[in-house]
Length: 105
View 1 (cartoon, one colour):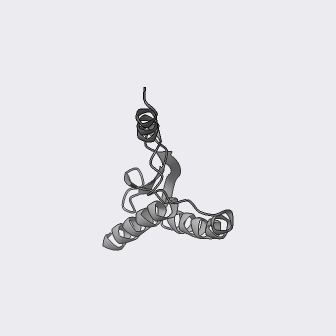
View 2: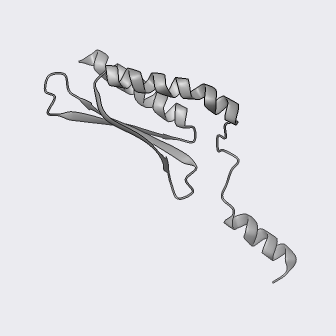
């Protein structure tokens, strides 16, 4: 196998990083308060379960999902989820959807 063929094959096998959101440690430490605020708001709105996890074959996305009990009947729940390359954006999207849904009830 020629050198340029090996290089091309190696480039094809490498996971794409160009769109991944990578936070420096300081930014991640500051963001932890923002993450906590979202979780506190979801609990205040009645979240019965929530989880943030890596997602996809390359684990470069985040999936945040939560279950909200219906106000009229807590035995029924509604599921919300978002997937994004940025964990905070995924959580923020779910919170926005939950708040809109609660305002409609």
